[in-house]
Image (tube, rainbow, N blue to C red; front, side):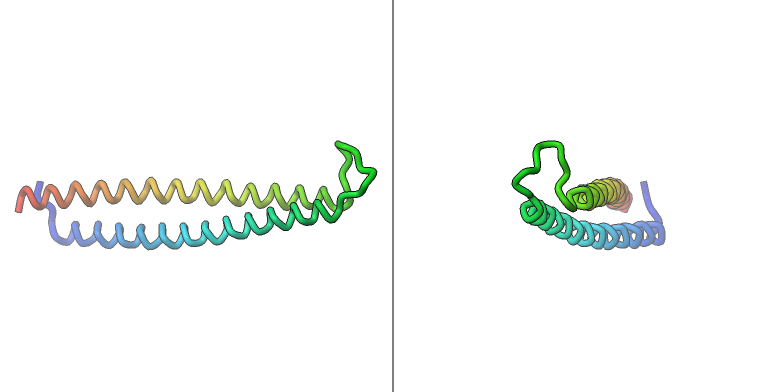
Length: 110
């Protein structure tokens, strides 16, 4: 299956852009994961600082509600970034397969 050089070049350029976007997204996700881990550690530290001797189970210590809210936001951000990475990975794999098919077709026809 012959492919025009212009079509191949266009697909190659799209593939390269997708790779760049994927790498940028992965770097961003890595930064966000580091932030989430750091915030999680801060939440744990703050929980330790805020514990009071008489607080029983089920009772919120001072500031624990805010800590839970922050932890929930961090978890939501992590899930969102994970989904973005999965989408980018699937797109990257599809474009790589398409490019591979085009290469194989042009090698067989050329």
